Amino acid sequence: MCSLALFLFGCESPRVDARPELLVREFIDRMRRVHGDPIAARRAYELLWSQAKSNLTERAKRATAVLGKTVLPEEMLAPSRFSLNYRPRNFRARVQGKWSLVTVTGEVPATQKTEVKCTLEGEHWRVALELPPLSPIRKRTPETGG
Image (tube, rainbow, N blue to C red; front, side, top):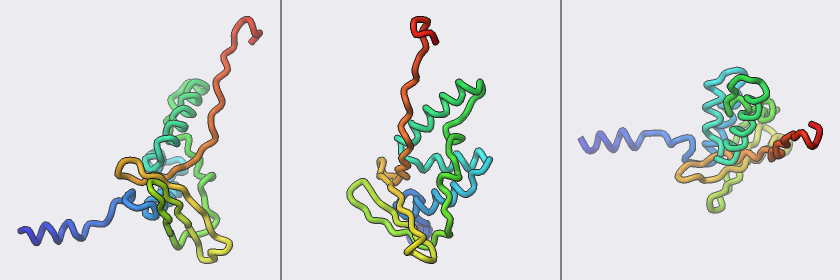
């Protein structure tokens, strides 16, 4: 019985967030499926680091206020911003402490190369997607004329 348990657990594939290169490969795959699919968007969003999630949550909150209908944070992901113009072939991670830089290359590494930053949050690697900071919300008052 014990050997069966070792066999079953020993053959289990690693979690996609167990290593930075696996995470980036999965993130790219998930982002390719996002176009209009809320489930795929949610699955890609789950792989982001907490700072990106916070940023997207605030963007969704603002969009909800403007549109008058609920906008989810994962709906703020723009697939075109993450699309690669080549097919990824190799994923190589350089880890330094809780940070990693994953180099993604295609068939022609000299011209087909992208670097993706990742960070370790708890026991899980996350894509450290850096989004532009949000500007503060300006409130109009009667005194300012707006």
